[in-house]
Image (cartoon, rainbow, N blue to C red; front, side, top):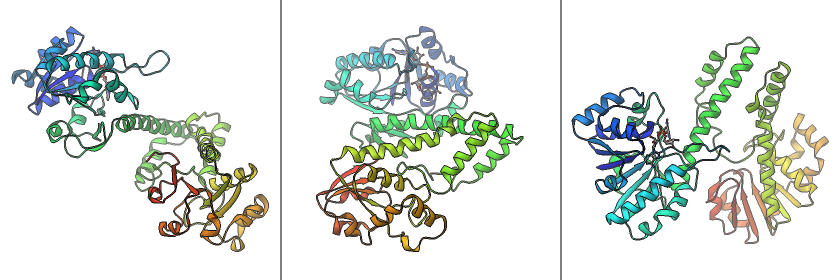
Length: 434
Ligand SMILES: NC(=O)c1ccc[n+]([C@@H]2O[C@H](COP(=O)([O-])OP(=O)(O)OC[C@H]3O[C@@H](n4cnc5c(N)ncnc54)[C@H](O)[C@@H]3O)[C@@H](O)[C@H]2O)c1
């Protein structure tokens, strides 16, 4: 392929050298003439293992050169990759001015060239940015088929950038409609790719970097706490990482219900209390309970925003296949809705209040005796004729729901049971749009 790369910094220089090592012809573009000159002569302007070797081989093979001219780069290539910086402004907001500058120049050059050109955006940009930039500069060219735009987030890490380029942790391609890119783009994107719409690809990139920051902060907070207790956090974290079933895995990574139950809230509270008493501040771990409360609050807000005054809760305990009600978020939801005057019914096939014993029974007797009277024996009784159905768990079969639900109902899917969308009623996803 003939590829132009805009921005010859860390991402652009590595991308150029690696693509040239695959045999592609590369024209590097930068506003910094020194970087253009370095690229042309195979001199890396950054320190990165193996970059000098790859660049000098590419120069010897006549596969790379630099220019400051966008027009020249567009005329001589079929694809432009944009890797210019997207720094923080003083307020912390994302500064897209460099990307804007490149896109406006690309638009002019492509309009003049009058041949189909593909633009691949790699700069890290907030969800919605590609769409905005396309509307501002490329809409007309797209309409007439002269431009195709992809958002292709970059995941390489400085220090191991060449290795990461060759073996990326993740390959995500954002397209305008979420449909796969054309076969001609395979040499650039590969074949094992996740394809989504532009804005989802943009969010995946932010999700990844935020997750990395979160993991590091978690390890550091556990580290500070361990040190105060005279413990070795390196071995604690090493052992913690040995659990690839629940810890280093996709477990607990689905958005949906707030966390609850007899362990997580209690243990997070105990750990933060202990750290505080030992003079160790753990702001991230401290934020877990407030964040969880905020999540529950947003669930209540969604119910409030609907016009329903009748509510049926499907699944009262904190997860399926248990009757443990301790710190179940849905108990909190039920109590709040009752307090706000909603007509409430509950269905949970795992729960039989008459048979509850121990702390579960005490909880019911002391804190919520009224809830027992709201628990219905059959699904149809619980659903009633109309109202919001808050589905916190998959505790009934879809076919059962189908039999009893009416057009006057609405469904609030809290747990990502997306087949609920098939029901002939209004569907609300708690944290997602389908
Ligand atoms: N550095 C990383 O490890 C890394 C990893 C993944 C993603 N990213 C993202 O990739 C993007 C680029 O990051 P970077 O670290 O390579 O940035 P960088 O600052 O090292 O390089 C950006 C380059 O763009 C050039 N430039 C600015 N305006 C230009 C224009 N109008 N035309 C041509 N060139 C122009 C600059 O002169 C500079 O050489 C950012 O959005 C960043 O968040 C960076």
